[in-house]
Image (cartoon, rainbow, N blue to C red):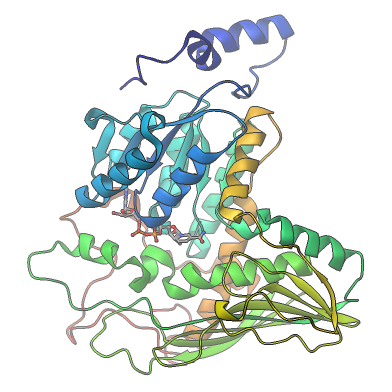
Amino acid sequence: MSESPTKSRREFLATTPARIASASALAGIALPPVHAASTDTLSVALIGAGGRGTGAAVNALSVENGPTKLVAMADVVPEKLNASYDKLKTQFGDKVDVPPERRFLGFDAFQRAMDALKPGGVVILGTPPAFRWVHFTYAIDKGLHTFMEKPVTVDGPTTKRMFALADRASAKGLKCAVGLMVRHCRARQELLNRIRDGQIGDIIAMRGYRMGQGGGTAPPKPAGMPEVMYQLSKFHAFLWASGGVFSDYYIHQIDECSWMKGAWPVEAHGLGGRHYRGDSLDQNFDTYSVQFVYPDGTRLYFDGRNMKGARDEFASYAHGSKGSAVISTLSHTPGITRIYKGQNMPRVNNRKELPLPPDPNLIWAFPQPEKSPYQWEWDDLTDAIRNDKPYNEVRRGAEASLVTSMGRMAAHTGQIITYDQILNCPHEFAPNVDKLTPDGPAPVTLGPDGKYPQPEPGIKIDREY
Ligand SMILES: NC(=O)c1ccc[n+]([C@@H]2O[C@H](COP(=O)([O-])OP(=O)(O)OC[C@H]3O[C@@H](n4cnc5c(N)ncnc54)[C@H](O)[C@@H]3O)[C@@H](O)[C@H]2O)c1
């Protein structure tokens, strides 16, 4: 499948092997990485056209550093693909050039959508995380730049695979972004600089919270629905597909605190339990409380809860020897990032309390309004592609995914889990995910008790289920 026949000569030249060959011959050097100039149109393909994949496509089509065009889409559910296409077409008109023959369905649809791009195009990987290494492998083989959503792995074996793929992508000069968008937030970046400058002293403790009204449940499968499609439709419920709510939801807080600390935690221990999950067949707990330990002994205390009627909190904080900092206030955006004298950071319960009243302990606050980090991450990626800057977030994204899995495994097994233990744990949750078919066997099956395998802390201790 070729790209739009209407593409300009410059656009054609920008991506053809002829241009690359003549450029390298002139320079007398090895083939340069494929990159586009500021006026070239970056062609984009979307794999996994659900909520976030569609959102990432919106961000891709909204960058202001040069033209972009969506040229291919892939999903396994026709309704998802159609809804995403309709939304994007309505919003972006001609920037969405995806005729029916470039809208692909099925478990091999990702290949056909990527085949529709020339080397130097950009692919969005917006499926559940289980497919990340499969789709990323193909993107590298095709010479495509990648934007992949977090988490990028859910277990040790796939993390090792992702580390190797990250190196392969870098060797090819490909630009790779991971959807830990807070890293691109200018407010958090300024906070990091201020922490590095010593404005709160040494970080002595951090706290992270992701507590909401529910999530990750799975009512029994509707009659007639293939098992694989059911599990994918409820991917937060199944550890193989997403790492569960722990990986899928909590990675952001764990990543942003570790970023501020300037290190990855080396061990975790924690607890959790199922309280009110009713008939849900999912593999999650509804409460989690995990301590992450950094190399210098500093702790991150992380609490996650998915429970109706309980208090919501979606925030992270750093406590330093001279002061304290709010990394996130009420979800990811706006960050409303601040530094306080002492340890008394005011509680912010909801958006109705914004803007915050004056506080005598406030030392610094990032000016409002803030641009969304979901847009910044695309501005940064496309800038790196157009200006051929080194740009590969995959190793870091895999490390963030791994330490998140470390915390999840600690809570699910009731053991202290170290970085090396989670990295070398042989339990690969979905070893045949690259061969999945809608009607084939699913990575987990119902037991004789009518339940999917559950974590049982203290009983199952070498693996989570
Ligand atoms: N960075 C963020 O803040 C953020 C926010 C939301 C979601 N996400 C991430 O985005 C990813 C998707 O989450 P979502 O909320 O958009 O889910 P979603 O269910 O809305 O979208 C996932 C889409 O992928 C499709 N899909 C599943 N398997 C596929 C396959 N093998 N090939 C092609 N398509 C396939 C599904 O049919 C669905 O349309 C997850 O990794 C999630 O963690 C990130």
